Image (cartoon, rainbow, N blue to C red; front, side, top):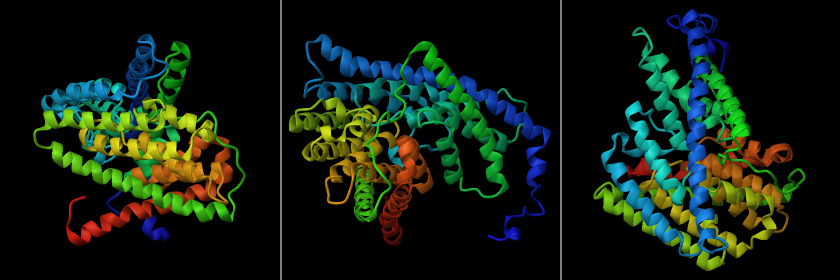
Length: 441
């Protein structure tokens, strides 16, 4: 790109004129203040969801005399999830939020749709639906921001309202994905903007995300309430990847991306099937998901909660002690959780990212026994590939994997970048074929 290409057109004001204008400075202040109540609402929302999840999968089984949830536990839990969600997606405004198979965000929702999103999340996710809280958080954040926008002066233009909605989404999602940096990169890659317009959008999102992160941290320490944010307290030690790690890391990234593609395909088929007779077919999908999760417990003798839910806790356990899992157990996890995830993408409400990260990590760790591939590079390649594949954004996937790996990400960064790029390229291949043939995704 040349300097002339980057310069604003005569009809477009210079960047410094926009950033220093009174209207934009007021918008920055409003977005900064907006991040605080949005983050507080999302903290309570996610904290309640995490508490309900622990009650269903840990407290209740122990009170019934089980060490952990028995193999059959997912069947009544997911049946209840389907029964609870069916009236929400058929009768409430906004249908409980957008289908996760369509991506992470979707169009901003209005304030009237927020109660449906909250109900769909709090009734279904704690019962074991294989989705994360990130998409509902973004929906709640944008809905609350648009509610604020209704009380702004009538002179507020549509661009400012759109910025407020995006700011609410990023403030809500920033902490659950590890902080403002991931949210900022998501805005950069997904906004499809360039030059001054991108900066104008990015600054308020950064300020709101940073304010939201402070609220999350402060209230978490004050209340002691857990939110189940995505983090890896411990990861396998490892040195900088060598030729062997790259030799195996690229095929691992391809395999992970193909699994994401297959999961999405199953999600689209499920969404098409549930478009008619939605209520009974949603219940049927709940039973199918419960059957897949119970199948994992029967095949491995392990806790079915490892395959259920969003996967944050299981991902942390896998990263902390990858040798505690046999290759057969990891293969069963990928198969059963992958099937459950694909069905949930097209029938339930939630975020697609967290389960995909666990699937990618499980594939990487399962392949770490190959000659020349260590656990740390395998985990890094799996995380980067799954994050980039499910988001469709290589930079966002790489940054998310790097933040999860913490200090060890420095050594793994070359492999992280390569895996993210390879995964995005693989996910584009079926879309290219569909575009040529005119087929639906």
